[in-house]
Length: 407
Ligand code: GLU
Image (cartoon, rainbow, N blue to C red; front, side):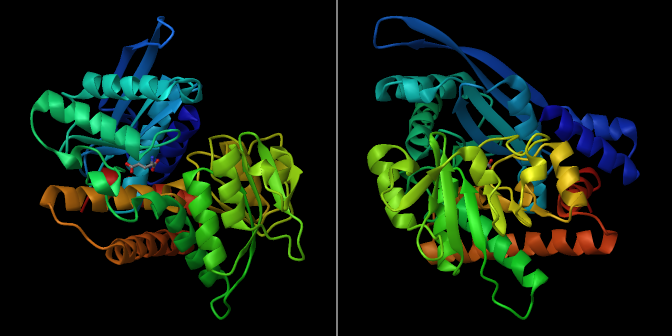
């Protein structure tokens, strides 16, 4: 993923006429931290974990991006995701840069107190190189509002002052913003609605949707899609996938959600039929939504994808080869740096509120999210039409222009 992100920027940057050295300077992270985190386990043993924070670009504002806890997290992955954050914040046109963090660990194997200790030690390691005007972390894969709160507590203890805007994605009772939890999923549906409207301006299109990943992002995407009158016919999680078997094959999203909460997997819903994760990606639906991890659409399955629209809610879910192939087949890809920007947009709104000590209503936040998402969609769509390029290329061109030659 790192190589393809870098190569995409090189190709696009050179075509736009930027000097090679300027592009290379942009690609390299401004700062990279790799550090050990000793974790004292409840069984008395100590495990030494590796943590990362890559501060990629700050030319438009403080570094911004999530922290993930995952067993496959690596320096390369975090660096690639940090680059994507710089592109994403520029696409959204918010005054922030790009960064990313992570720990190579399977958090599902940790107890709650081990998870808390890990979060606090991670924050302690970074306490002197982050902050509300420097670098503002947020949740990502397997991290959440509770983890942000633990990290903020440790950060504030070290600095001896309150600084709620140093982390975003906190719970509302701890200085978070209303609407942040739903933001990424809702933002994706706002972008999808804009796209459908461009494709058929005189019609309220109703589409069938398959969602790979039913975590925070997938769930709120499903919920908002159903509100818009679409039919979610399949969802999956790491344990398997489920498809509806009623008259329209639609799933009862609240029921599936309830079931996942109770039993830990979407597959246990009584109303659905179980299929494999691979089957889900290849279903004959209008819209496919990868909302979990990177590189799930690749050379081995790209020919079997039947959806006409892909909404990339995960970061980097389509490999470069698969992207090129699918575009050549006429598939419309709504790129991650636009489709999933709702999360960082509401993080930005949370930061603005936290810095000023004022709190907006949920409706206020969602209205602002709507405005920013729509404006970014319009920028990318009109650029893609003007330059006759696909939406991913258009997003990268607009972002690179904003980052490398600001007005
Ligand atoms: N982790 C999210 C992303 O990849 C949100 C980042 C943020 O809010 O800073 O966009």
